[in-house]
Image 1 (cartoon, rainbow, N blue to C red):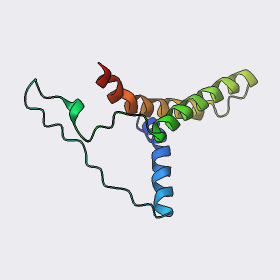
Image 2 (image 1 turned 60 degrees about the horizontal axis):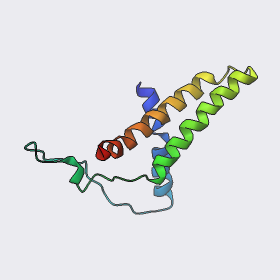
Image 3 (image 1 turned 180 degrees about the vertical axis):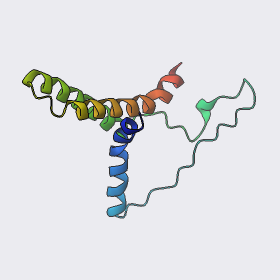
Image 4 (image 1 turned 120 degrees about the vertical axis):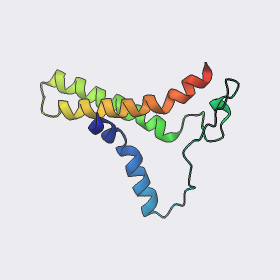
Length: 109
């Protein structure tokens, strides 16, 4: 499971390295502290929660679909050599994508 998530985070890690190489300054974003003390408090109004799709979320979805199609292609063409890696990448990017959109789905409820 650790390896799957690590592979799914590779896009974020690569993007961070690229931004560092080109010298892009990014703000420090704190870990969300929800401070929920009673049932009337809601995490949906927390200023740290971004309730929108970002470029990286769309790329996660694209990469999950891309590697899923690579699995299908490998099966159809009879090339099983990379199937395990494509499976791990598809599942990893899919897991990261689901975790990225979970706040969006929960906010709609």
